[in-house]
Length: 274
Image (cartoon, rainbow, N blue to C red; front, side, top):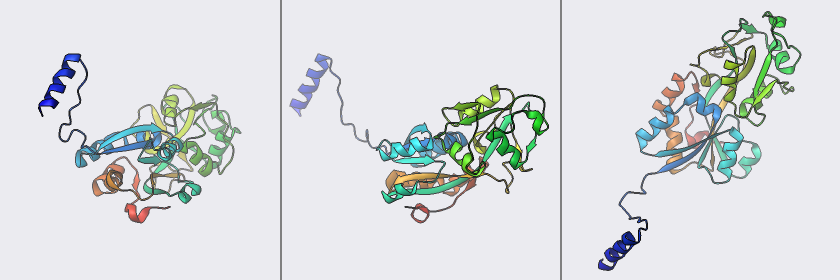
């Protein structure tokens, strides 16, 4: 003990940093979470804050595209990924698992100043396919349609092309690096149109939802939905499982519903696909 104290005084004298093993200093559990930008924007920090408050488990958050979030999981930068697209089948062969936890509509957004309220499904495809290029062609003013899309590697882009465009090519005027950047772009660029998760823009000012086929993203029969997933290496355990359990708990589901989304209720051990 004497020798230990002597060593400490020597270190202090030399001006060197000292790291003492205080009890509990490293005891806090942590979940490293890589999250899709759409999912983060849809939930904000509420889900993470409430989880930490309930469990004492810290969440190290990294926001990216869905594909980048899964890539970080595969390269051990994360314990869990949040993705807005299903896991590719080949990853399941390597032991990765997905747990669906939420569904949200994929909304078409325009500036609040645009007088056009509704588009037919074919009109929407023609706008994003480049056949319709002026708002006057769909009952609006004589103004060019500025098509803004998320990056091609984002789940928003992939889901919209698959579901709304039925695989057809998207012709765009501008492309954002991150999916949620389209929100501010549409706010600030007159006569623009884009798409993003409904919950990500639910309370945004200076934007409005475009009706598609007479339906708003809040209508239960709306045409375009995407599912949000947790992805893990194998079955989730420890703090990672607690994070998933919180999301599908009554409190977690209440947060999902308050954001205007639909819970997908599966226990991790029941809902996993691998």
